[in-house]
Image 1 (cartoon, rainbow, N blue to C red):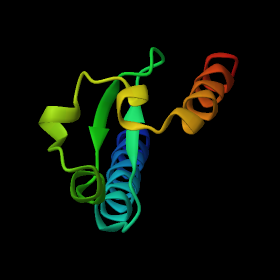
Image 2 (tube, one colour):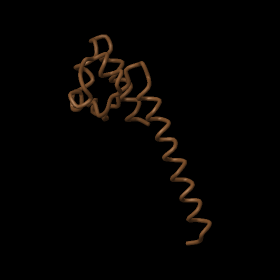
Image 3 (cartoon, rainbow, N blue to C red):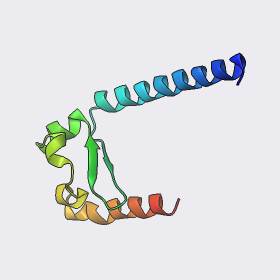
Length: 88
């Protein structure tokens, strides 16, 4: 292990943290509903706009399936996104 490789690793970690912070700020500040799902369609996280629009806190939504919150017209679309994610 050299000083140069440690320095490179440190710079990569700092860039990664900056990217994560930027992503978090973007999602948290969005006026659109944003949530993340497991491959099974279970809500893992949501942003403040999702809480405001849907009337549930993130804690209340965690563990719900997206189908419970979507209109029937959007169920097939939601499932198609999960299929795309599963297949790559």
